[in-house]
Each structure stands twice: as C-alpha cells, then as structure tokens.
Image 1 (tube, rainbow over the protein chains, first blue to last red):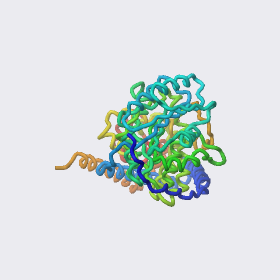
Image 2 (cartoon, each protein chain N blue to C red):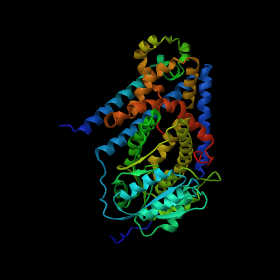
Image 3 (cartoon, one colour):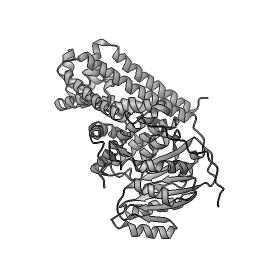
Image 4 (cartoon, chains in turn brown, green):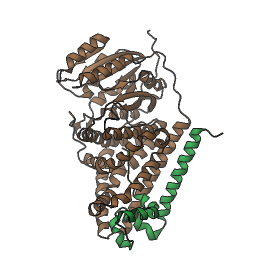
Length: 434
Length: 80
C-alpha cells in the first residue's frame, strides 16, 4: 500500500568540527599512557610514592564517577521508558552489503529479512565477492524479488553503502543496514524504525544476540560482553539520545539524514589516510554531529554469529578498538559544541580510563610475574567490582554471570592490551579478518 | 506497594553506595593507603609499608576477608 510521504523539516546542518582537537587529544593520550607507566616504574623503586597514591585516587574516583553516571542513566531509562509512535506502514529499504559471505548464512539472513514485518524493499550489494557467493545471491534475489548490484572488485563496505544510497534508493522514509550474516526477528524492522518517526531522532539501533552463544566458553563469554555492552552501556547512552554506535548488525537511519551524510561518510580520512573500518560508528557520529538524537531499541532484536576461535575474536576486536579510538577522537571534535555530556563521557572515561590505568596494569603484571599467587588476592575484589558496575545483570540476565566472570579475566589479560596496541596502530586500515 | 523495578534500583543504588563508601573509607586511612592503592595493586611492595603479605593459599584466603575493602580500589574491569 502506497502511503503519502510525510513532510519533514529540512535536514539540520552539521556542527562544524574542530579537527585540531584530534591530534591534540591523541598526543595527550600518549602522554597519559607514558606518564602512568612511568609512575608505576618509579613507584617500584620507591620514588614519588605520594604521586602514585594521588594517581590511584584520581583513577578510583574516575571509575566510581563513571559507575554512578551509567547506573543513573540506565535507571532513568528503566523507570521511564520512552514510548515511540507506532509504525504505520512507512516505506523502508533494507541494505545488505555482502562480501565473501557464506551462502548458507546469506540465505538465512535474506529469508529472515523477507519474513520480517514492514513495508520494505531489499537491496543486496555484492562487494566483489570471490568465494562463489555471487551467483547464489543472484538466485536468492530472483526468488524473493530483491534488487541486487554487484561490484567487479572489492571496494569496501563504505563504497557499497554509498553506491546504494546515491544510486539505488527511491523515496523511502527509512533506510536500514544489516550485515549479511544477521538474522532478524519478525518485528525487528518495524521496532527499529519507530523512534525515527520523532523529529529529533535520526538513527536507531537494536539488540544483538548470538546464535552461537553456547558453542564454547569463548562464545558464552562474548554473549555476556554483548549483553553488558548493549543493555548497560548502550542503554545508558540512549537515555541521553547519544548512542555512539548503531551496530552494523541492525541500524536504521532517516533517509534524508543518511543522504545528507553519505558523501562525507565515504570520504572520511584520519591523519591523511582514507578510513575503511568502523563505518557504523562513523555514520552514527555524523548523525550526532547534526544535532539529532540516536537511540537504542531493545525490542528490535537481531541475531548474529561471533568468531568462535580466540584468533578470530581477537582480530575482530583489534579492528573495533582501532575504530573506537579514532571515532572517540572524532566525537570530541564536534561534541564540545552540542553534546557536553557526551564530550565529557568520551574524554574522561572512554578515552582516558584505559590509558590512565596503564600504570596500574603494569603494576599488576609485575606482581603476577613475581608472585603468581597474588591473582588469588585479586579475584574476589575484581568480581565484586564487576558485579557492582554491572548490577543490571543480577536482575535481568543471571545466566550471563558465568560469561561475565570469564570476560573479566579476558579483558585484563587480552583486550586491555589490545586497546593499548590499537592506540599506536590507529591509522592502520587493514580489515584484518579479510 | 513498592514495584519490582523500584525495589531493584533501590537495592542497586544501596549496593553502589556501600561500595563507594568502602572505597572512600579506604582512601581516608593514611596508614593503609599504601596497602590499598599501591601495595594492593603492587602486592609485593607491601613490604615497604611493613605489611606482611601471606603467600600460602589458605593464608591468602583468610587474609582476604580482612583486606577485602582495601583491595577494592585496584579493580580494573572495563567494558569498552
């Protein structure tokens, strides 16, 4: 049923970015890292003990402040959940960029999108796949009346989205992007676009669950990490309308806002290098930069598979962490004008804490190397801290506790150090997993 | 009648308050400062503060109960 297009106000202009902030903060982060590491070394020789104490206190209060900040926001969101206007047949297009996807996963993805409710059109963009999935995608497209466009060579997800938005769209209200291995719930599409009917919201994202959660201990742990990331941290950001990343698994944008951003999106550079990865986070940044709100919708549920091997997961994380640092720096360049709380959150916590805590982490490693039994002394307090900081798990997802416990160690011994490595390789644009 | 969400969040903030108070208390005790932010983080350095650290598992467990609040500040789990 064709519905008359609703008149919308013109797209808001982007807030000018103060790009000089990026190199300045980057240098400050390096300085923070070396200062905190240096302090740990000095303390080991009994020097500047008072400074080490002060450093520890600052770190402690930053952590406490962040815990309070996050839990207050999640509480606000829980106690007064925002009700969005109901979906009423607005037109939407689902974009599925695909590169060397397994035919079975692509089929599962397409079938779930076809079955999902909503007045939708589906477009597959094959980004130069070389694994034989292309003919399979063409067959699927023919069977389900889906439009497909194929690149002759691999050009990257940004180029695929750019091509689709500039050449293949019609007059839809909303554009939804999903990964080619995402499986959607029946109501995922209509739930994720409902917030976009409000004039101040231009992007939204949904819950991501793992299809292979119970495959092994690693995937159990990753499922807990996803749950916390979405239902504690993303929920807290959503209370302020500043979700910083509409996940590639399921993200919805108002079409006029996406069109206005797409050129800038495809041309993004960082320290002179063309950016390829973390496109979902950058697209979200561009929406926030235009003074729109970005929200998280727990009822819009998608499913995906996570790497089930340590090597695969670490590679994925490495890519994400590089994008995380780069995009945090980008956020700072505009948020100081229009999103003061987001600016403080990124500056004081998201960026500062991992690098500020480097000295403490070195100290712990030193301890564990010389006295491995000390880990026993740390476990109960780590556990308590983890539980206090992620209290909603106790009430809503006790089944995730085992995975969270594993994640606690995994973070300290692997993921933390990846953040540090990512700081030094932030310009690296390789896809790694490809 | 208190609703379940209100009860949950009241409990949550009580827990967070107790946790915060424990951390702040550990900061305000100069005699044990080194045993918290320095020597608990760098446990082997506790010798410098004349605090004997037990290294047998059963001693550690017994000691943990006493030292629990003092160990809190070194907790480092982050979710990024």
